[in-house]
Length: 268
Image 1: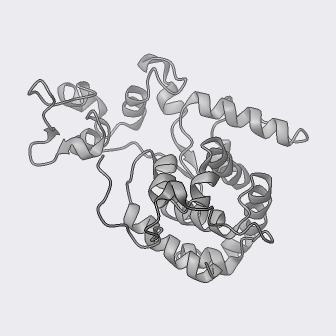
Image 2: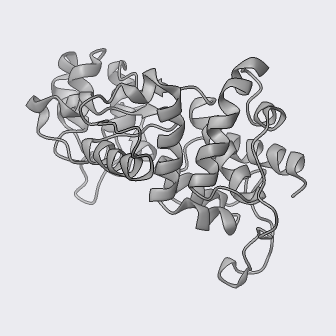
Image 3: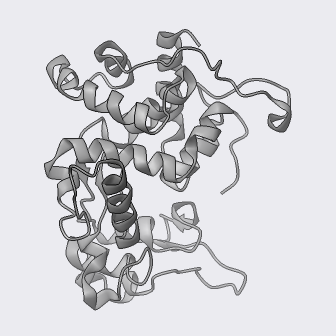
């Protein structure tokens, strides 16, 4: 996808090439998450909810090094956009048109032409479809999360084939959408290495990322750390952070607006 011509709110504004910029965090005293800061990031949740999760957020922030103002600002902006700080799971119940837009085309959503209800033309002059069955067998997948996610996540992310059911079993869950058997296995290993007193198997019980909020929180920080997003946050690279978290630039304007508010609250 082409980069935007105009940076959204919250993006770094220096004219110095990013490769020549110094890291934006000061390396001073670690900052912490507060209820007031969470309200800046996402206003829809009540204060008593934030009071219940703030300690868990701070514990994981320390554990994964999300402990400078700039790192924390980017993290909270992204999680606020992704899940509003709620443990969620991927729905997967899409209309025929919507499932084709999200999953159907090579190159992602930007390559879907809503007017034609098809993918944009590829080099061969034909629609560049990635998953043809979303058109040829739409009645099998539209409105059926188990079948759709079993299909679109098959044979990747460590999942088995479509018949295995892994795509649905290891659908997105948590404060960010941890997706795929490999990611559930890697999070299991990381959690057990850091917290030997609380051994868990998220491959065997993936719903823990929804039913137990502490694991939904921890998995978001693990995901952040596994993709080395702290370095992108240190460079104040909103687009880079968004791509690392989301895989694309979906919702960039909202993520940037949240980031700008949080920066103001933190005085950066």
